[in-house]
Image 1: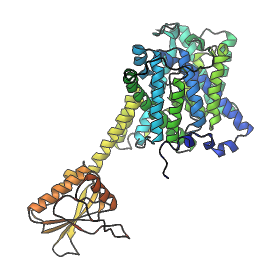
Image 2: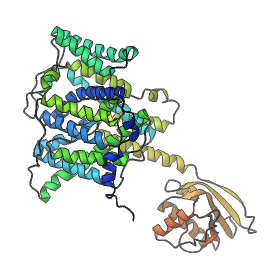
Image 3: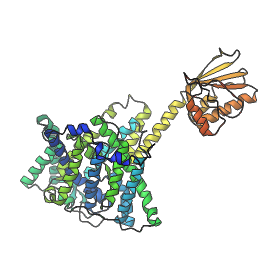
Image 4: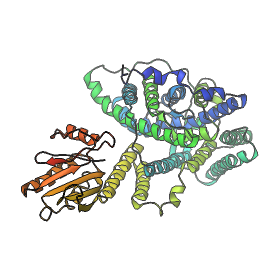
Length: 544
């Protein structure tokens, strides 16, 4: 019996799907590497989660709880071991309007519905398949710039009051003089340590070493520089079950559904693109549908535990992978370390200088940006170069989801334009029927090439019998069917016969779907080619 999309839900989220190769590779050295990578990621998650909470207009613990819950669930059952998820800026910028107009309880309800939409996408395998490589390059370049720009706020003087009423964050005034010089020096020192540490030893992840050394210098010498505690207090307890206190009626659904749909789309786009990027770095493929299910389940749970929802985080994923994290253990460790920071280690974590974390993220920027895209700009097609620049710009100026959609549309239009110019015909006399003329069509016949297709024929000058051979062509869409019907009408009006040759079963199926006159399915069993068919009325399609 065929399984329904939801029948395999438990299978795709089952812990029995854990990679057995990963389990067999858990040596003492591997476990140490995974735990240290998780610790490094957890340290970098703290300021990011707090900052994105400010963007969304909610309390910092709402972002931290989301980072913990989403990170833990996706690490356990996600589609790519080593990938990190949590609260992200791409989602926060959408949430801010909802929170400002309706309050945080509506946000929690929206996150639950967002997760349900993502579960549906995963169950029905509605995943991204048509993202061209230039769009991927533009995506990583734009995201690298966004990560860089997000760090600049740490060069502002701490102590401002956030719009939500919490006395956290920055004042909006930029550092100058000695404070700025000290901040820049510590950032540069962190980056130098991360660059040089692997040349000395790989026993400790370089980002963790950078954070630890710079933190020790700042605390040891009592340097007056911004620290994590200047952003917000991260002290809290375990997240507790909290049902969103919103009216259960259609009016509530009208409010939250549009936000939930947008958030689900953005979250899945960012997660699946990050999945592909991590897959390229780790040499693994697949897992897209499973990642959709994991993201959906994580957000449903998060919404019921007072979290702001989340998705994959490319910056933290890069930190994890480059720190040696290759299995689910690093992601699980990152989430548990984050919870430990919230519950028992807040006083220590709040002493970490922001400069160290900024240095780590700047190294992520350098590692994320596709520098080779700058070198190949002159060697690739102009349309591909344009798509890279366009997606980068839209990602920076707007958001990731819009950038990817724009990039795919432009790439598709460029592809259609190029293929529209490929259609042509070779004419010859028929060897099977004296006096007949054969047009051998080459190139796809679709909406973009129908005009060129019509220009290939000369009905007035052609003999009484004309054969159109689609062996090296393909009829793609309704526009192609209409072009063939128009051509048949021209020859019929002149009292001439038009035949179509080499029609395959997929074209027969297309004609059936089009609701047009059906062709014979007496296909050659060896070559799966149909015999010639006369066009008198109706329409016939062909293709190879």
